[in-house]
Amino acid sequence: AQKITQTQPGMFVQEKEAVTLDCTYDTSDQSYGLFWYKQPSSGEMIFLIYQGSYDEQNATEGRYSLNFQKARKSANLVISASQLGDSAMYFCAMREGDAGGTSYGKLTFGQGTILTVHP
Amino acid sequence: DGGITQSPKYLFRKEGQNVTLSCEQNLNHDAMYWYRQDPGQGLRLIYYSQIVNDFQKGDIAEGYSVSREKKESFPLTVTSAQKNPTAFYLCATRQGARNTIYFGEGSWLTVV
Image (cartoon, rainbow over all chains, first blue to last red; front, side, top):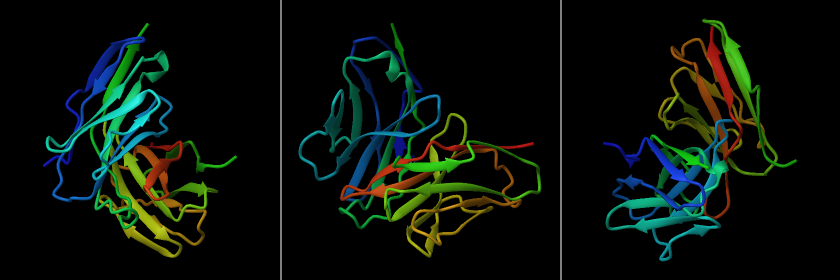
């Protein structure tokens, strides 16, 4: 079974609009971490945002926020005020056993969503 | 400049040859990782190392080998036993209490 599911192969958004990229996950661990990465066409993976399973508040980093719904096992990325430079592939990833330093750090990735921002 | 440096950026390999991809970091991170990415796909873990002189197999280690003789360096060798080595290879390191994983810029390997 897929541990990380990104159901949107591609998304389109108008510049300055907000967009939500979906991610659902599957784990039996109580302690885990959820990550979003951006991969532009150059190939590098850029860390965007992190949410720990015990974090009570949804994570925010500038224009990025993570809509964490633990009971639904979803961790959607919200990008506000989209910019042309946001056009890229976006990956959701999970690290299980994320007990604040005890995990060896293995990330399981989803298939990714290609975001295209139109002017 | 601090960061994770991968080289070469592009590499072509003839069938039957071994090639080594370099990964160097000056972030003083303990843990290092190698991931493989196939076109349009997510990343899969090849090997990881939590400390010097220790490393463990990931999900797709067959046909690959690594060493960790220094904290700063974690080279990946793609051996001739790897039947489908054409892919994008990403090195990563782990930092901090939240174990955020940061990636290098990647290396493209093509078998010709």
